[in-house]
Length: 404
Image (cartoon, rainbow, N blue to C red; front, side, top):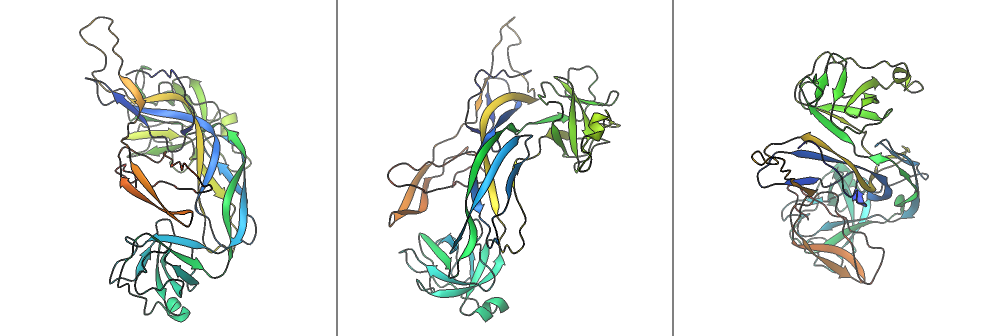
């Protein structure tokens, strides 16, 4: 497989967590393709809001060689509520409670236990107060007094488990981020990355490294002049390159590019402007990957925050080009002259999962998974249909690509 032509770019694909392309053919195999997507910021998911801000923090989007996104946080003083599953977060005879995405509590903090109309988790009593002893950001123990919580002595031992979703709620209100507003979506944010093997490229036919003229040969790399890229390697690096340095791209042609080291603040492009390119003295070993910096949210550090935030940008866009990482073998026809039998290239396939929301007093408090499905990756969303509004539900995908 030499190249892939895009017949329709599509739209609304997750640039950061794109599910990937699938190649199907009756005889061909082993082709590996990377879809390069470019788009704009759509929203920011709050996985962990951060607690205790003294003022509204500055939030920015970086990476992907994009620009122009403008964000603003909504800071609200409120009680902190963290939910956990009564059937899986605790165990009989043990003392810890496990939270999927962090509990957001402080050591020694007083909280109220809420069963949400489910059977109490013994010996806890609904609407009663306890004190938190921190084990980790996702695990804690409960105590009857603050002194015991801080001293980590005599934690409450669970003698029963419950069903459904249970909650712990702070008695005191704190400043926290409830929403991130996208004031401007920006443009040009991309997941572009290409990989080449450790082999000499002198005939301009095979992807690899040219140590004579010091360039990378990668068919249809689609990089642009002044793009910033990062280098990664799974074995021995190319001599002259570092995985700890950013580089500027100098395009030689559609298949070749050179690299200049990004300088310190104030002189970042000096090497590029002076045409000082990295010299490759060896090809290293393994696979060499050149990629745009990861697209990520940056939160201005504010002293006094008791729990740091975790924010996930959602960048939606279209497929700009496809890079052939591995050409594979046995595609087409070897015994019929001029017969161009094309393999099918499309989105990775999935099987359907089945979900059931659990509603209490007009609010969705849990989602039961009736059928896990398979083939899912991180670029899926859950849409809630019907009466009601404001509910947000985020999927979690296991490594084996099941939906939970």
